[in-house]
Length: 455
Image 1 (cartoon, rainbow, N blue to C red):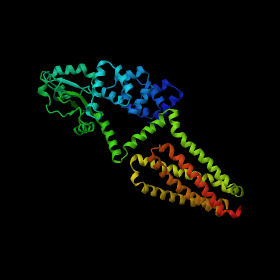
Image 2: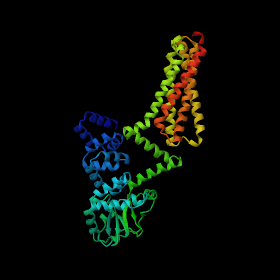
Image 3: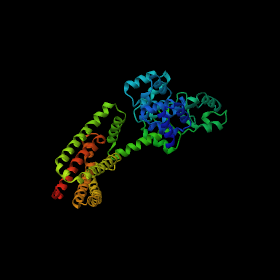
Image 4: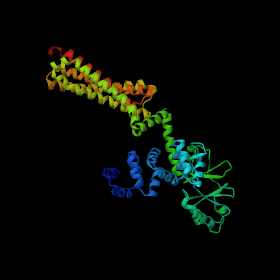
């Protein structure tokens, strides 16, 4: 897979479209789906346009909604209409749910009457129900037909159906009467009537059945599809196995976040991530620039601290050697902690109701690491410069700075989270500013107290 991605990137960078087209034509569907998921929006569009028309549609229907929206936004209006017209009605409805009302109305209006009716039918049902999830492309035969007549009718419409392996039997009023598999139909006596070979007991769900309940039922029964009926027992669609698996995955993820109390957090962080990655330059500036200004001010204040201890630097030049070590180690420790906090919060490993316990443990971790790193670095500084007091100042400053930075790495993101501020953009700049100033102050105070006799 990595080799395939690297080859694609090489073609894209060289703008070798012919070579890229050949590479894509020989790739498997799963490779293409993973590739499109990882590519930036602009490159997604380039790759998608080089696929054959039929394959492009197959791949498009397997992409996640975010990737689908990115591709749609890069298409011309004509291409958008073409893609939507060729999609299965249930997949079309799922994607339309993500679009603004005006866009949805325009796209539906561009469809032909048959496709418009199928889409409108599905959109008329409540969200997260079997009616909204079903596809109206299924195979039915009449119970009065012979097996030979039914097979001929299926042959005429099979190309337009999502699946033909399960055949549903209805009466003249479309009431669901029975079911049989295509295999059973093929091996049956051609002159036998359908009602004599069908199974009369049919597992089914109604249009208002919860989508997860319907999906679980399909999974338990291990069927390829499940019929969806209205209140009068008329079949109006089918729930297919692939759609059911998508729903089970979505609902399971939702349940995990709900149990952890993080459902809203997941949505909020997803929206922030989308804005920071794919938003306009001005949107990104609004989030990131204020925190970078904080870092700049912090850097200037750190300069003021260094300037205040200019005499110490002039008297003992070796003092300056260890400033980068103290600042960098504190910064790395703080970044590690903030990253661990963010990941733990999203995955539910950090319980905000027990935050002080998490903070205490992380501070203890920072203290232990700071003590070890400080001890080793202090010994090196003492031996290197031949000034034991300088080694003590470096070691203690490192230990205190790393402990403080580690604690801030948990504390600052937590405060930003409670205030509803984007922690991804704001935590590290604030941690860096506090850590740099405090670390330098501690270091220079120790140097002044321990090495005053050399000044």
